[in-house]
Image (tube, rainbow, N blue to C red):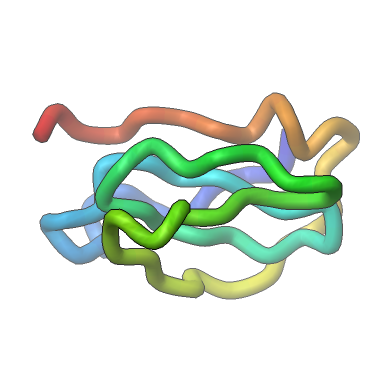
Length: 69
């Protein structure tokens, strides 16, 4: 898996991190849903683009909870 963004630099509302197949990292306020090549917020929460890093070997394995809500 690619190295994820530094948790201490994220907005406090970011609870979940996930990386798309193209290498883009996103932060989400609610658990995102899987699409055909990435993640989406399902219109119920906030999200923020956190930058692009190396493409992951398996983007489906990048979803991680980084804080409790």
